[in-house]
Length: 338
Length: 286
Picture 1 (cartoon, each protein chain N blue to C red):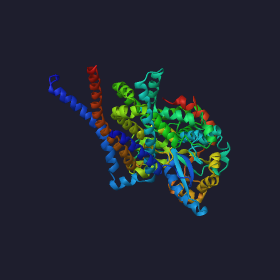
Picture 2 (cartoon, rainbow over the protein chains, first blue to last red; picture 1 turned 60 degrees about the vertical axis):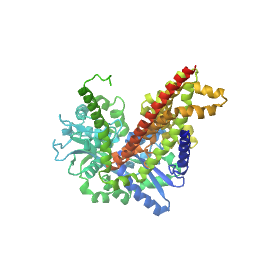
Picture 3 (cartoon, each protein chain N blue to C red; picture 1 turned 30 degrees about the vertical axis):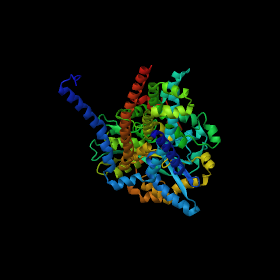
Picture 4 (tube, helix red, strand yellow; picture 1 turned 120 degrees about the vertical axis):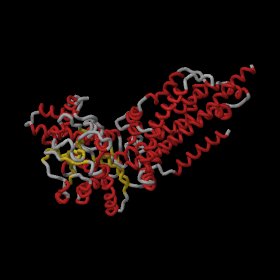
């Protein structure tokens, strides 16, 4: 029967492709896996090119850096479950804390190992509105107005969304002299205006810019700049509120994985290089606020000065903020209209 | 045709509705995919498909299908053979279990493997201690794909095998054929179209699976991104042309699958009809 020959042929063909195919990773290359969050895709594509070159010149070694991107919380979960990250570059310290706590892959005091709370770059939370700002959105108060549609991701899954939420909360505390009840009402009013909670920052940006939903997107500054640059300055405008939160996305070597792979030195250098003038320049080009004064001055026009507060100042650190606001039955669950 | 009782306008209206539904829900989206893929010209289209990350995704998808499909082919034939030709205890349980992957959400299918092989999972610590990588690597992607495509071949074959009954095999056995000869020369020729049909469906699902694979993949660019995952990433990077170019590959796969499927369905119907005739012939002989 002809079919039998066809079947045998298919099987042989499969075996051949398997033998000759290059789908299996090569053993000899030095590879490093950077597990990161959503909006850093473009930053690390660029950074990896420069770093690979730098490392080659310094040591003669060819290194291949692999990237993985998704919502920050989801990525932390994956590393805990065994995603072999040599370094993690996530959206907030709490997610790396979770890795340290639940898997023991790196020490609990990881954040003290690098300068500036292990955050080589910072960002702030801003608003992205449609061209001409038709709804006249100027500050946080406008987000709670009735008839305004606000887009932000879900704080349960997205790191960026937690920064957004805390920024609104911090603004309200400042406005009503630390009156928690007033702040709660204010944030409740803002979230009442949210028609859809996506799972990650990038998904929310897509909802706002591509699907055309919402009057304002609460967003990382870098993410807002990227959307304006990629999708047209004639379509969107960035609005900087009167006060915002200083978002510090941290980086860390995952000790046990790096040691197992024998990549610790490489991983450490990979993160340290972010703090050098060259690294800071790449960071600034991708609209993250650099830590280094000289680079910050060069890009001053891009980053308007603004009154900022930190999580430590207003919320007593991420552990506390997480427990109070985002844990099960926390404040977010109480005010969430869903 | 005497069975037609509806007036002409009803017939035309029904056909019209069916065709416009098809155009709206299938042709239009397909056209949009190809238009978006080609809107910056064929050169950009080809360039975005030959990007190293895209090539790696295509390779991984093919490799996954190349391993998962033969596996399920062997399993499907064995299971349907056992179910259709023999009686044993717990047969109904086996049938139910084969159907399980179809009734479970793909996300759950992926999570099963995370819970099993993840670092915090049942087998995770042992695997880690022995330096075996399963989760967030090729083995998990293949296992998950096998899991979700598990029922495809078996489900197609069970009714075909049942329709043919045991008579031909019994005849072969009494004439002295051994088990393998019986299978190779009697059973396989009978079920060939059903088998191919199952393989094609299985392959289409293996290449197109998103949810379950997304859970276990780890999304490492150029390494553990299958084609559907790669499309999502490109879309999220505002790289719409490249995303639609990759999507057009999957759309083409779907089209080829559909064409093959209709050819085989045609042959397959003839085969089932032949099976029916065969039974009648036997009865006449008796």
